[in-house]
Image (cartoon, rainbow, N blue to C red; front, side, top):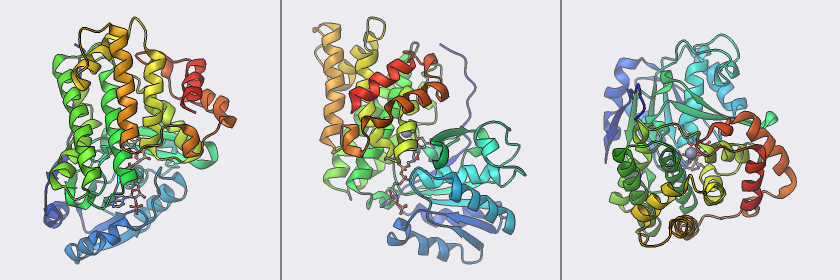
Length: 387
Ligand code: NZQ
Ligand code: ZN
C-alpha cells in the first residue's frame, strides 16, 4: 500500500430543495458574486430566477455562454476580467462540469496579475484563488468534489487538466431534481465519464481490497442507475444515486493507497476533444474498450479477470483471457446499450489527423508512465482501432 496525503475540504449539501441553503452558504463569502453558467439550460430549469431571488441583496455579475469543453478564450479571460473589474468576492457556478471547470480557472486567474495560462500550464503556481460555490445540474465529471478543471485552447489544440488544492469548491449544492432535464445523450456520456474515472483508478498495479470493492460497487451502481435514468428521466432515486456515484468518482477517494494509473484514456480523450470538440464522455466510451484490448497481456490480465468476475459476474471457471475478453465485450456492449456512438467516425473524427493527435498525446500526456505504458505507436494503434 502506498503512502498518501489527502484532504477534500468541499462541503456537500445533497438532496431535494437544498437550494434553500444558498443564502447561508454564501453569506460568509462576500456580497460581490460572479455567477457563471452555460447556454441557457439553467434558465429553462428556473434555476437562474431562483438564484436571483435568493440572492436579491447581492451584487451579481454574470458570465453566461460557457461552452462544453470550456474555452480559455473567451470564457476564462472574460471571467477573470469581470472579477478584477468588479472586485468580485466569490464565484457561483451554476451548471455542469464545463461551467464548474471554467469557474475554477477564473478563480485562480482572478488572483494572479499575469496571463492565467501561466497557471493552467503550471508555469507559475497559483498563490490564491477566489472561493467557489456551485449548483450542479449534470452528473458526470465530479468537478463538484475535486480540485481540477479542464480548459481548452482552440488555436493550439490544447485541452489541459489544471489541478490545484486551491480550486476545491467551498460548497457544492447537489439537488438531483436539477438533473431531470439532462438529455439522453448527456446522461449516457456522464455515465461513461464517471465509469472511466473509476476504471482509471481500478486498473493499476497495487490496489487495496477496500478500493477494489468501492470501484466495483461504483461500476455496478453507475450501470444500473444510468439504465434507470434513461428509461425514466424523472426517477429521483436513480438520478440521486447517479449523482453521488459521479461525485465520488473523481476525487481520489477510490484510490487512496493505490499505485498511480496515469489516466491513459483521459490522456487520449483530451486530444480528441481538443481537436474535434466532441463530448468528453462519448470520446472516453469509444476509447476505453480499445485501450483495454490493446493493453491486455500476461501482466495485466489478472485485473481484467477481477473486473469481469466481480462486475459482470463472468464464470470463474473460464480461462483468464476468456474472462478478460468477455469483460471487455461487456463494457463495449453496455456503452452501446445506453446509446453512445461507439466509433470515432460517428462523432466526426476520420483518419486524417490520427498521426498528429497520437504525437500530441505522446508528447503532452506522459502515458509512457501509465500502468500499462503507451508509446506513440500504441496510442496510434488505439486510435485506429477506435475509428
Ligand atoms: O450550456 P448549458 O445550457 O448549461 O447546457 C449543457 C451542455 O450543453 C447541458 N446541461 C447541463 N445541465 C443540464 C443540461 N441540459 C439540460 N438540463 C440540465 N440540467 O449539458 C451539456 C454539457 O454540459 P457540460 O458541462 O459540458 O457537461 P459535463 O458535466 O459532462 O462536463 C464536461 C467537461 O468536464 C470536463 C470534460 O473534459 C469536459 O470539458 N471534465 C472535468 C473533470 C474535472 N473537473 O474533474 C474531469 C473529467 O474527466 C472531465 O475531463
Ligand atoms: Zn472524465
